[in-house]
Image (tube, rainbow, N blue to C red; front, side, top):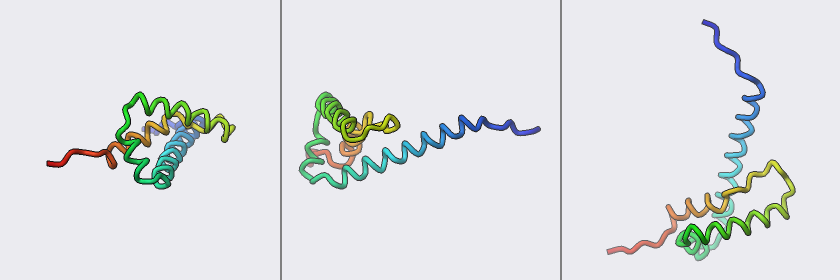
Length: 94
């Protein structure tokens, strides 16, 4: 049975999407690595509502600095917050 050929347009979009996902992970890693420990801990312990406010401000900043429609800066702050909640959240030890 012959293998159905894939649509080159769809393949191109998938490659571009994966590249964008990889770039977002790199951006998140770079931002976290540049943050002082105190700020990482503060962000990790913020409430979701506070992070959403930061995301709005971050979106405005990025749109001003990067005038690219291709750049998906949406939810970068949430991605950073989620990663830091796993690694930098203060917990009570007994």
